[in-house]
Image (cartoon, rainbow, N blue to C red; front, side, top):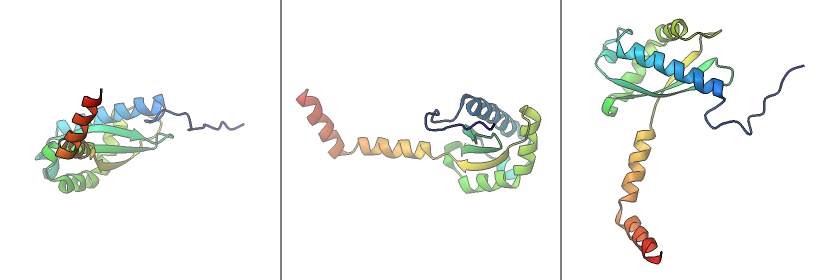
Length: 138
C-alpha cells in the first residue's frame, strides 16, 4: 500500500533528509567552484558563494542559490553555471552519495538585496519618527 506524505506540517525548508542532502550538495558545489574545477573563464574570474541548496522532496532536483562576490556580473555567472551544468551534476554525483544524481538548476540568491531594501526602509525619516513615537508611549 503506498504511503501518502502530507506536507501541511512539514518544516519550511523541507524534511530533515532534504535539508541534509541539500547541505551536502551545497558543500560539494562550493568546493567545486572554490577549486576552479569547472575551467570556465567566466567562473574563474569570480568568487561565488553558495548560501543555500533546496532539494525537491524526491531528491531528484537541486535548486542551487548562488551569489557572486559583491553581486557583480550576476547574469554572466548564471550563464556560465548553466553552460557547465552537466559537468557540475556529474561532480555532485561523484561527491554526494545518492541513488540518483539530482538535476540542478541555478538561481541568484536575492535575499541580500531584500535585506538591504528593508534596512533602507527602516532608516527612512518616516519610519524613524514612528519608532520614536512608539518608544515614547512605553
